[in-house]
Image (cartoon, rainbow, N blue to C red):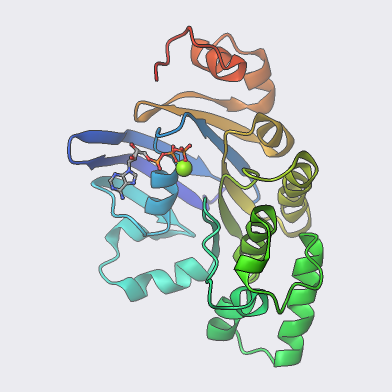
Length: 251
Ligand SMILES: Nc1ncnc2c1ncn2[C@@H]1O[C@H](COP(=O)(O)OP(=O)(O)OP(=O)(O)O)[C@@H](O)[C@H]1O
Ligand SMILES: [Mg+2]
């Protein structure tokens, strides 16, 4: 089977700080991969490298069959980004635009749709994330959790075959958190959308994961299916799941 994402021997440091030390993994079309890891372990850095917001130091990345680590100019990224939704950790809506303008931003640039068709789509997408009727509001007029869901609406607006989620449930109440987890699954089942979900939220991880990897000190110290995670004796996973202070992971 063709990979939708392939990462080979990826390194990233900031000065003396080594963040990623030779990681490799693949993601298949329609698969949901959860990446767990402590705060500062490099999860957001990894996602930002994948979409070209940060450069890799070394290694190779293929997205949608193209080696993005060979790209020379910003425009090279455009077709790849069209096929890749990205939900930032901090939401990152455009403050000066309404929710309607935020969600249609990419559509307007890349698809030739009538205003009417865009209105119909936005309505449908907002309904799916339980945010009906907020089209004309500005981000500052929404609660943090609502902003998160509006950012999710924007990330999925072009119906991309790959979505990268950075902490999709952080800052949401338990019910909306479950709703988002179900939504990630729904996108997979209905449209065969592949996802990488970076999270601390074990409830979310259990609800969405086909496979799980735990990042620690620049490498994956566990990889397995959800079932394997539940049954493993891996000391890193045990410590992470229990939130124990004692164990192989420090800090
Ligand atoms: N642009 C940057 N410049 C310098 N250092 C950075 C930059 N981005 C991240 N870092 C550092 O890289 C490390 C990994 O950061 P990252 O944001 O990936 O952590 P994380 O795993 O996403 O943590 P959290 O769970 O808290 O979101 C941190 O030590 C952070 O300070
Ligand atoms: Mg992060």
